[in-house]
Image 1: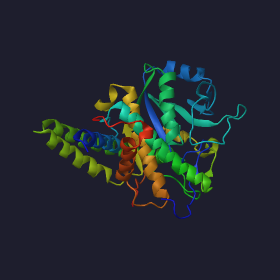
Image 2 (image 1 turned 90 degrees about the vertical axis):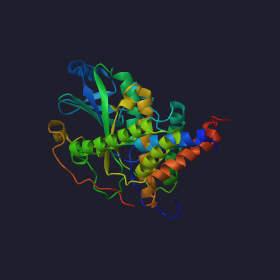
Image 3 (image 1 turned 90 degrees about the horizontal axis):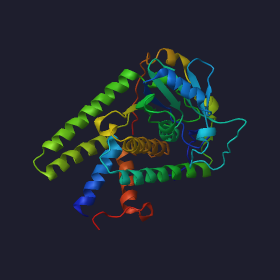
Length: 262
Length: 83
């Protein structure tokens, strides 16, 4: 993977690749939500109306960034992790890395009660950027709602069809073959530049922890693909990332997974 | 390899690919850890090569305020990442 000198790609202060991501919450009680954001010591009102900068301090000072060794938190100049903004009935949290999004979701789950706002979807970029790349400063340009929603709807519809076919299969082997063919085909597809993940699909809605775990896996496997592709491994696909990860999960004793049939 | 392990591997691959939780939570937790290790290995190697240029997130990712007022008005080209 790393046999020849590598071009640098942009990382953020906390050590991860710069990959824009935006979480969208549906607001249920706007006044109380704004009251809550104003009350959080890690949030400071932004220069514009209905925006709050989220800093790595106070309530979230203990968020861990394993990719980071040398960065020291400063109380006088705290690091901005992201930006909250309220628009109509939506709360957006815009962040510059996947890792921050993965830390932000459980943090917000603790700090912002679900009666105030609930997580709907995440929009993100499947790409890392070079020093001289044109950066997507304007999130509106990247996260086109209609395009992302159409692609998501298609993905959900395809998945639901496969699920129905599996349920109607005559034998377990037949169901497995259907799911296997679908998964293989999906994993070999080119990842789109920008993508949406929903937290509102039936399979995700019941248990927030399960929904978060599946999101984490979905998102960070794509981060791995983006980084490996940047490192000149241009043929690296989601299927490769999945196979590598499965090998580690089922084959590496350090991860503590035992063969459940043993 | 037992059918049970083969099934678990397939279900995990489906979760990685689709984001739908076909796998049980203990396997998902281990998968998250495995991904974290793989990604951090990339970052560690990159840091050793001094190949990364760190940019301040305080200045890098400014919120486009116009998007708050008028969300989703632009329709960009969606580029597929080609091998």
